[in-house]
Length: 470
Image (cartoon, rainbow, N blue to C red; front, side, top):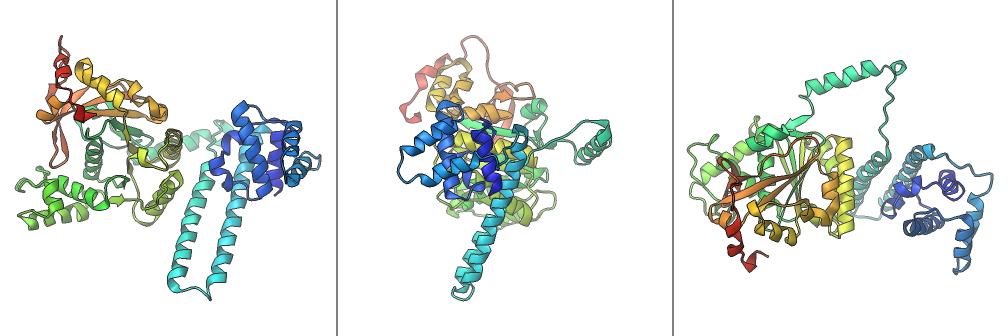
């Protein structure tokens, strides 16, 4: 492909690293199909990763001359450095990557269709159905790959009708109620943060068994109450467990059902509810009422669930089932192979996805145990940002970071402390305790029970540390 040879020449002759910074090993297949070109590009990329310098033609020829069976790579190096191959200027690279991506996508789709035609006569209906499903998935993923390389540009100049375009965008934003998607549903948070914006990346962090997922589900439920559609991706609990959880929260909503008897999550999962009809009616209300948003619960079954799968699912559900207003991801630590570098990369990509799609994401993330111990021993049980720095991209990419904390003393008092660790655009709300009804999975505000900042507060905590919490 002439585009790939031109890009390789841009790297080798021009010493330009733009392509290397954009096309990593993980997305290499989106741009290159020729095995020799892939091998050469991979070698250049690895040298660049070690030295942060683009290797010269001389260095690459010396490298391949020491290797066996590399004649094709050496010939390619000579070919791409000839005058007949045009190189690109740095500012042209992104545009040509877009062209290249589309060409590769077309080739893949053409190949898939040819494969399907070959199988039409020899395969069973079930086998053909699987092939068609795979092709549909690849079409969606290919669309995502193209979108990921598209740039967003805007020339602010009177000759380009900048004012008229701005008016149109502003009027559209005005019709949609501004950038705010919905309220969090907690007065202490909404007074400061003014609700969830369409570009928000909200991280809920905490140690194990500290009600992180509970808080995420409560945010999600309050969004449903505001007629917002929620995609809940669960990587830890099953679809049925999440369904039961939302069903129980809704059934126990006293503002909506003042006469309902209290039921717990255990009642629902063990099927020990006495007034089943009341529970069925509240479930029907959750799923059919026009004054509530739609809830789509997704439990990925793939062994490997990474960023591309996440985006493909978003487009599939958004296009076929409902317009998604909010995504809850529980939890990002369980995506892909869960190594620190991979998770940081996924978080960074999700941030770009949010900016592109204007769909906020609430992610649940595990905090390191050392950070929890430090907070347990500190006055007022406050976290520091060091507690999340093992996944440094949480701090870099999140617009909001909210932590949950429960000491043994708080556990006895049925309380959880919420702390605002980071915000890009607003002030931090004060750390405060909320009441937690663990059996039904509901967190409610305790305005009268703020954190005690008086002298000596928190000193008793040292005496109640138990090993089972770590």
